[in-house]
Structure formats: C-alpha cells, structure tokens
Amino acid sequence: MIEIDRVTKRYGTTTVVDDVSLTIPPGGVTALVGANGAGKSTLLSIIGRTLRPEAGTVRVDGLDVAKTPGATLARRLSILRQENQVAVRITVRELVEFGRFPYSGGRLTREDLDHVDRAIEYLQLEQFANRPLDRLSGGQRQRAFIAMVLCQDTDYMLLDEPLNNLDMRHAAQTMTLIRQMAKDLQKTIVVVIHDINFAAFHADRIVAMKDGRIVADGSPQSIITPGTLKDVFEIDVPVHEVAGRPLAVYFA
Ligand SMILES: Nc1ncnc2c1ncn2[C@@H]1O[C@H](COP(=O)(O)OP(=O)(O)OP(=O)(O)O)[C@@H](O)[C@H]1O
Ligand SMILES: [Mg+2]
Image (cartoon, rainbow, N blue to C red; front, side, top):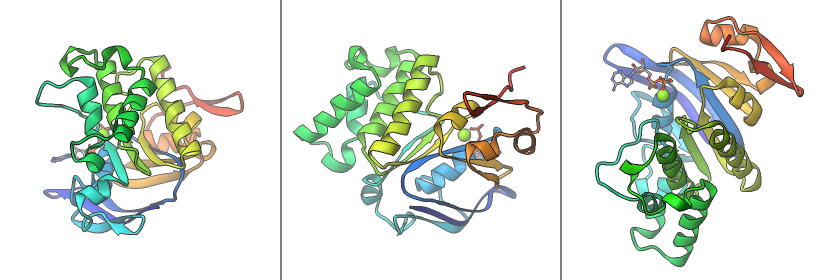
C-alpha cells in the first residue's frame, strides 16, 4: 500500500503539490491525469523519494520513504521518469541491466540475466539490444527505459508518461503489459497518462490533479464524464459509449 499523507511541495512561494493525501491499495492500475503543470510528476518524484516535500509523509508498505535506505526502497518501488537522459554512451542491454542494480550491485547472476532478457523481449527490443541509446528512435529509446524499470521487478511501479513517443501498437501493447503485470503479478502501478481514453480503458482507478490538488478520484466511468473533464481540464469534451466504455472525444 502507498499512503500519501498531507504532502506539500513548494518552489519559492508557489505551492505545486498542495496538502495531498491519497491511499493506493496493493494491486491494480491507477492512472494519474491532469493538465500540464498540475503536479503529477512532482507527486511521483516525492513518492519515489527523488524529491523532498516541505510537509507530509509517504509510506510504502509502512516504510517512510524519507527514512528508508535507497537500496531497500529500490527493491520495492521503481520509477520511470518523464525525462530520461543518460550521459554516457551505453547500449540498450546495458541500460536494462541497470534495473538489476538494487539486487546485483553490478554483478549479474543467472536470475538477473533472465530478468534482463525477459524485459528486452517484452518491449520487443531484441534487434536493438546491442545498439547504443543515441542511435535509436525516440520511441525505441522510451521502450528501453520501460524495459529497465520492468527489470527492477518491484511490487510498486511509478510510470511517468510511459507512452511518450510510442506508436499506436507499442502504446497499446505497453498498456496491456502494465495491466497484465498488475493482474497476474499483483503489482501496484501508478501511471501518468495524458490520453484519457487509454486511462479509461486500462486503469482500475483514475486520480485527477489540478493546481497541486486531487480534484477527482474514482472509477473510469465516474471520471470520464463531461462535467468532471471540464472541471479538470477546463474544456468541453463530449463523452460517448463505445463497447460499454466511456470514450472522450477531445480531439474535435
Ligand atoms: N524545479 C522547479 N522549480 C520551480 N518550479 C517547478 C520546478 N519543477 C516543477 N515546477 C513547477 O511545478 C508545477 C508542477 O510541475 P509538474 O512537473 O509536477 O507538472 P506535471 O503535472 O507533471 O505536468 P506535465 O503534464 O507537463 O508533465 C509546474 O507549475 C512547474 O512549473
Ligand atoms: Mg509531468
């Protein structure tokens, strides 16, 4: 379980995460949605303890993330960042191997290598495995970073816009994989997504942020309504039902 208790983050006098409390029970996919600047990445970074809040606490399975050693937390919780850069020139396989670092400390066992191979296969990166990251397309590189996080094999996964740069097929496959991991492996996944329809289709729960606060929280059916979308995104969005699910037509 992830327990976020009254978390506040400020930059100067601007509050970007404002007294947020949220509980994410084990298992399932939670989609975090909201406009640019709403505070989604900031909240994820605080949960993943790469950012310190001014107030509040985050507990993962009862462990206060601010007080838990990095190596301990890294075996429970992984985070895919929105922006990914690597300074050195490394290959896809080397990047994915970093995912095993919390376990192997750099010395990969047979089991670590199995995880690496599986992650490369899941993201369909076999043909690029030995290619340096700077010689890949944007979407191929994004898949390499997802493979690295997958390889970390943690109970909790925080994915900040994993579908960035992915084509239709890879976006759909990645979301299906995320859903399967939650269902079959009981992982708890929080995923930031801008495409509200992807969120509606694949998430068990949608949490919407606006101006640093949580303004809506519920099932896709309860969130994907013209009224809630107007509150969250300040735009009129017709919602249709397709195959029994809500479909927001926001591109018209
Ligand atoms: N280092 C920083 N210094 C000052 N302000 C920051 C800093 N990082 C983020 N912010 C501000 O905090 C707010 C929340 O940013 P955040 O990255 O969490 O938004 P987001 O919801 O992830 O948006 P997006 O959908 O664009 O990724 C924004 O207004 C942003 O300008
Ligand atoms: Mg962001």
